[in-house]
Length: 125
Image (cartoon, rainbow, N blue to C red; front, side, top):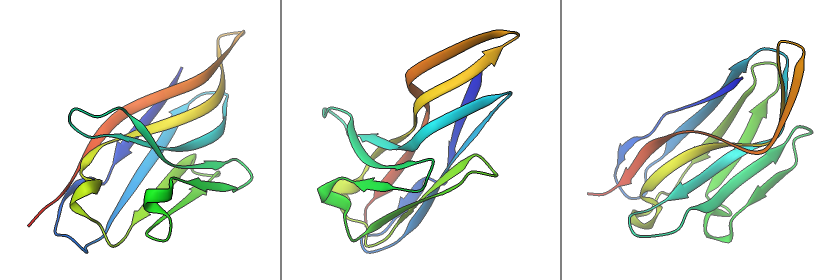
């Protein structure tokens, strides 16, 4: 199978920065799209930013100009640089894989949406 491991969350003051990492591991796998979703208390999970395997990014309007997503395919890792953080960015950020193909033995498996664990981001004074 494939594991998506998120790291880099924490507590930061408004206007500060954080960098999240989403590292994928496993054997014989491919991930078309990697990225981040977030969920604040009492709110639905929402897309933050995604990036395709060829490097095409997509951002939620609320983070455009402040967040930058990148991807290192050799390391199977996506990064989210978050600048000018606001209290409303506070949420659990979930690592996401879209279009994940992998082998278990000789059996090929494909999942349209694949989730890693979350990492807490808190923006507060």
